[in-house]
Amino acid sequence: MSTIKDKLYFNFGGISSRDFKILSIVLDKGMYEETLVSTREIKETEIKGSKPMLNSVDNSPLEFEMTLAFEDKFTDEDIDKVIRWLFVDYYRPLYFEGRENRVFMCLPVDETQIVHNGLNEGYFTIKMRCDSSNVYSPLITTPLETVSTSSTITLENDGHFEVYPEISIKKNGAGTITIENLDDGASIFEVRDLTDQEDIYINCEKEIIQTDIIGVYRYDNIIGDFPRLLYGSNRLKITGDCTIQFRYKNKYRF
Image 1 (cartoon, rainbow, N blue to C red):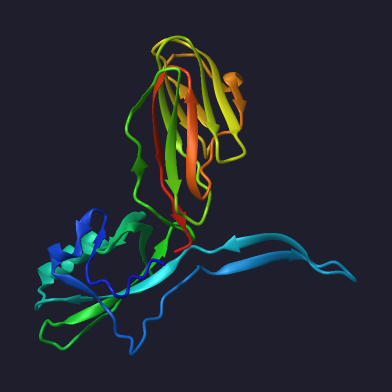
Image 2: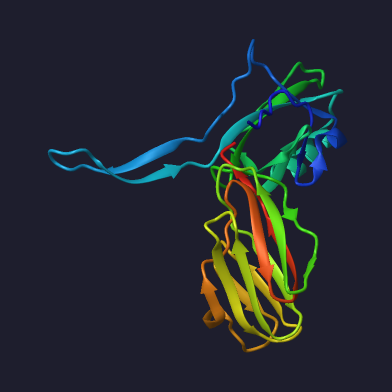
């Protein structure tokens, strides 16, 4: 679980709260209360004389509050700097020191008020809304793997969902590249009839494949399903001479 209320410092948009001498504090009494899973709504169709038919489960984007206090007395300039830093109009990555493996893509929403004693000492509470119901790991990028004939690469997924990686391939010699997930029922994905030194980019989630050869499309050269990473270890057997690299983010409910 990604607890955050016991963490003092955080990083938003690549900038640490330490740079602004701001702490994330807790005003709760006793035990901490935090979101475990985002709000869920069931979509059903009523059927006369029978149980309702489940159509879907909609997950609302995560929302959470942060109470931020200045370590020292603040000035008008300090307030302006914080506003420019936090109150952006697009989602930016946020993580807490000590929980760097959980990244929230979020931005501030609703009204924010500052509480102070008239002596330039105080705190303010900000409400963050995420781009989805999920939290992410930092981007995981595998080393460039040079494959001669065949090689097996192990990718770890410790998240709550299966994930679909991005793949970069440079073909050495003409031919076919095969990716077989030995831990997913030996599912096979192939890209056939590639040319020597051809660069291929594959987005498995969006089912996009691109080549650096102008005017050429590779969708007709694909066999099988785009690779996915299940929970746990995923042993991917790569067959075909190439240099290959994977990129992905694990996804969590919180």
